Amino acid sequence: MRSLTKTGKLIAIIIVLSVVLSPLLWIFSTSFKDFKSIMVGKIFLFQPTLDNYTYLLAQEDFLQMLLNSTVVALSTTIIAVIVGSLGAYEIVRYRLIGNLNTFILIWLLLIRMIFPITLAIPLYDLLRGYNLIDTRTV
Image (cartoon, rainbow, N blue to C red; front, side, top):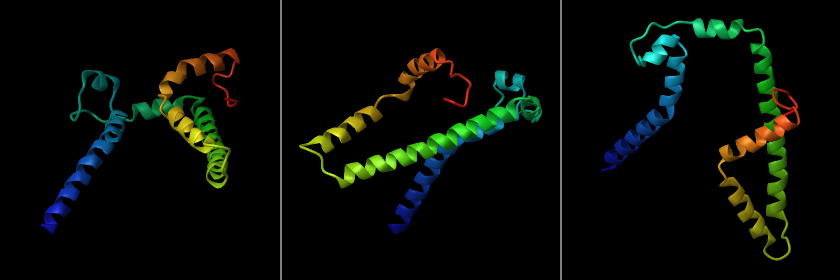
């Protein structure tokens, strides 16, 4: 009986890993295909090529774009961790008047339930209005 539960857990882990890792494997294998193989839909039988990587690295501004993405990702992560830690400490440590703590937690939960994609177009319009598209300031 015990080996049956271990086998069941192992099968569940294998299924979950295959579901999680299959898109990454698909992306990785597609990066080695030429345009025709991608459009025809050849999944396994294709001639691997490094042309996509050669084209990418040959672009003059690729390293600049990579640096911009890295700077933005690291700075927003650091800012989010600092602000989130301070906010979480305040909510846990101090009791506010009435049920304000509960109200804040429910409000945060509701904000997290908004699909991020619904904010993409208004955010893009806002950034375009301030000429912040394709800059590190964003």
